Length: 248
Image 1 (cartoon, rainbow, N blue to C red):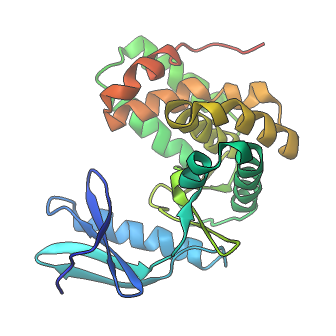
Image 2 (image 1 turned 90 degrees about the horizontal axis):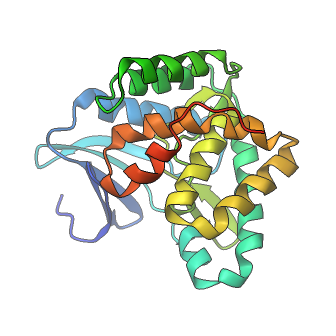
């Protein structure tokens, strides 16, 4: 298969449009287990009936693993936010409504969010043992839930197609506390769409009847786990959030 129409590129993958398919090709050094796990997680979310691309095939292309799935036409919510800043409140409300629909689902076979956060924090060379202990103690004290969490619920992963809303890129999906998932989204917005960040957090808390301080309590944990991504442009903000604090 010859792929020429590149439509997206990440650190470990390239996505090509091939007819009515989107073909996600992984770098040669990505382990087979990681690819198959992503396909499994995606398929589990598919089975809930949520609107996401449908996986059609797991294959190898030129020696590299690839996932082929239905291609969703349309614009990302991030593109719409940039094109129509006057509609930011409308877009944020849509984003929150979709995320609440995600959290309403349950997939008992998904990995536990707390386990993933714990593993990320334990592996960080930037943190000394005392800081790790404080963060892990705080993580352990947070309530355990089993809601579906996307893990990267960001405007660029929400596609609008003729009024239909699709959520893509489920490789980080877990079961856990929805407020941790919200804290991750808030952090991503602070990094990428700061004008929408506070509006998003206020809107989510109002619609879900969640105390803002409850979401904020997750931020040091989420920030620490995010450091594992090793993105220099994010480090300054993440390090500011690392102190274990109680919000008033």
